Length: 316
Image: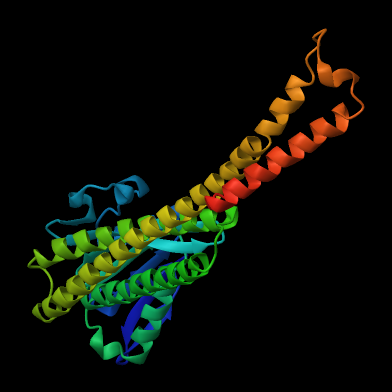
């Protein structure tokens, strides 16, 4: 699907018609948004802008040069956006191209960031005179979303920490929850690091309007603070995981202690039963009418003495 944002009558107008390219010039267009585009739509944009859009493979490359690069006529930027789903967090790359002041975005998924950018565009169109300004605005919205995601994970960690801290046992579901939060935090950190590299690349460029650079510096500071917050959340999850494993070890130790004490507790009685279970010819108690009750009484007495001894040592 293609959406073209036109500059008309001091406002921005949406138009999904490809044929409009035949009637307009670069100065009439602010933004061309390609959402899961067809081959025809992509070719029409390439022919109109006289450039080649990046392939999916090029967009997904992790080298620094693939995150931000410049040619004689265009600026190419690639950024990772994450999507929250019931299965967890999924990362999707988005390609940004700025040529002749026109912003071109190529993406495969729907993002709330672009919906909010469109709303801002309709409310205050005069602030978006070029595709450069719109591009930076989209990054600002995305960075705010990244901060919200980190804060959301931090709140979940705090709630889970409070829940585990008030218990003597940890359930299997809580251990899985910690693992899911660790995986989410790692993916968010990777996306934020990607944002950091992209902003650093833009700040080194001389192609952007001068009024944008102060905003970029503020955005970079925000990203750095988000990275620090994400690192703290990850360290807190490590501590929480160690605490959970410590509680599990204590539970296992207590269980082992119970079985060990039980075996030691009954060991003297077992010894007496083993002695009177021997098949020797001469056993005085064998023919006594008090042999059986005497053996039982001995086992009870020995077990009672062991119990009192363990209680005195505070082993029970």
